[in-house]
Image (cartoon, rainbow, N blue to C red; front, side, top):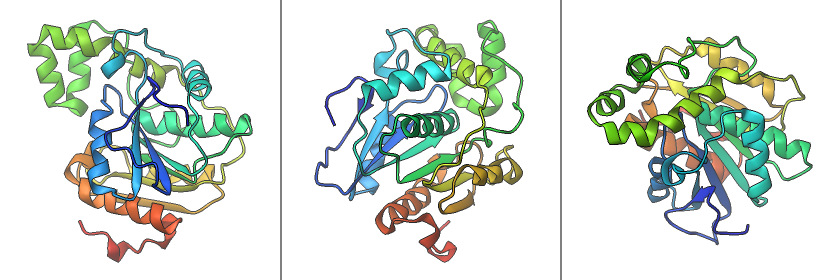
Length: 257
């Protein structure tokens, strides 16, 4: 892998690690939340995928169409040969489409796809488009899911100026996305979600159609951002899957809520 890259952020370099985990943030998310996972995944080199117009790249023009984003990403980043993807919410969709694009180019695929809190892509769109709303309307639309962040944005004009352009682009990525049918991947796939999220098991289960490899579905306590409350449990699941090679070797008895 050619480093450094503006697309990638890493807190702890572990070149000797047997596998790299590339994390794709949620809408409005920061790679900083994910690269800290390295503290609990000592055998993994954890990388965050930083999109233009977000976080440290906030001054760059954001990309708001999935095809352009994925094509640009895979053209700029060599993920190596032994790696996995984790994506939460929007990040799950970007991770999935990135894996499909790598396959189309004949490049190495992730050995594992960890897809979190995202409905299967072949399902009808959920929610009401919000990227076009004015600031007040957008913040109101965000409140049910983003809670404290929406409150902070209302109170801090500088924070709004920094975050909202990238967040609008993230919402546009979802709103403009059109799933194209294709052959399933042969990656192992683990899908996770929050048991109190309004995203249901019935919306997560259809991800199964997108892999010929192992498939696991786990619901952990919490809402859409269950991964913050259940970080230890989630990373235990990821760590064991990466060490053992297949998510279906993990017993549910091994997961401590």
